[in-house]
Length: 614
Image 1 (spheres, one colour):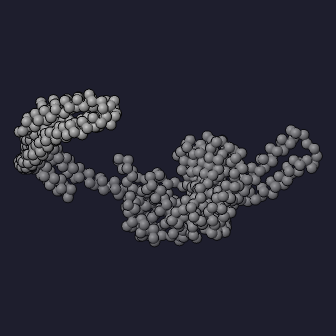
Image 2 (tube, helix red, strand yellow):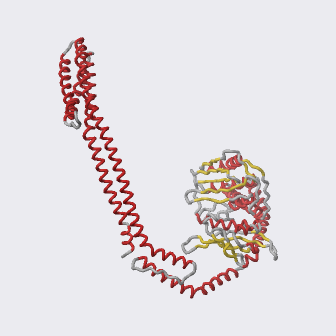
Image 3 (tube, rainbow, N blue to C red):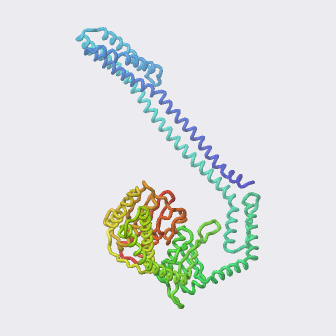
């Protein structure tokens, strides 16, 4: 018999118990409904009829009073429909006699009604005012009270009957409730006990499989699951035993090969000349190579956070930054330049290490571990310093002839050396713009060389955030209006301050706002805001421009980089300069953008004095 069939049969007792309980419930509910329906059929219609007759009598009495007071037409209009209503409800009552004495009370009511209507007709034939009043109070009104009293007798009789029958239904419902509870408890006990007994018998082989799996987990591959039968559990047990046989053979035949492969893998890692550190997702160090042990010592054990406490602060910060970048799901951390290289002391002299990190994924594509490589970029750093010095020297030497060239162009434009034609003036104007562009490029190159060489001096003071942003907007408002852009700002609610060099921050704002203006179409908007945080103030420059594709966002802060496909609108150094200035302050800078939805460049500045990242 199949396992599915056995499990279904195990549920049969519960199903039968539920079915029996349902039959009992339906039967009792039907009986309760019949009692309630009897109350409605026997008494409620009579109560409704007598109430309507009383209301009709009261309106007819009001109509008679109108006639007695001289309002004959209004009284007759009121009397006629209510007379018909009374007679109709009286017929209903005559056909709904259900209680003892109700027949006699109905006959009395009918007789009084006939007497009242006879006097009512005589009342309508009288035209004299005083006679009408006398007739109303002496003959008609007492008969009105008699009819009303007769209706109230029938009403009270049926109301008392309804109360009595409701009490009977309530007692009956309580008995039914007791019967249903007893039946439910009994059915549940019988069904549960029967189902438990059958289910226990069915799943007993699963406990055998569980015990077998536990022993296999402990390394005992000689154990086998003994399950008799032909159902799915027995089939699973046989397949389980087959799997255990295969594992036993595999362990005996492949254990040496696996160990050899592990040793080969470790040997390959140890042969790498650069330090390599591997951690799991909790930051626990799971593997290091010989180069890492030789450079960083035996501290590389336990957790990464504990190991970094024994390292130089700059190197520990670089490793932590690379590890967190990968753990944030951003992919491999591969710095684009040597700005993040860390100088350390070594027996052979100073060395520069650049921290890189790569994610390691499992078979399911999920992040399994993180590998950190400390690249030795000492030679590259020296070459980079030489190139920076060369560029700085070139820029300085180029400045003097460029200044002379700008002066000569200015003299020509002022026509101090003679009158020039319009075409000649156009050429000189173009030359002046090229000189200005070249001068800006040289200034940017010198700025970034000073920042990267550590020669940038920051004169940091406490700076009010609000005036800083308002001044930055004021300097660029005219340019934004010329481009048809709306330039606005949102200031923090309180007088926030940052500890920074105001002139350098103005340069950062200038680069970010100018960049936003260049890449936002007419009719767009640029918003500058400051958001206070616990230790920092976060500044944002948000535009509605063309946006930056995801694959280029990590490169926009590199030197001379511009998004491919865009028209070249600057030197490509502005964001690199801004990045170096912010990091020199001990802050961070980044961008959030989607193509076609604009960009938000943000950076943080500490509120109090704080060491820079470098």
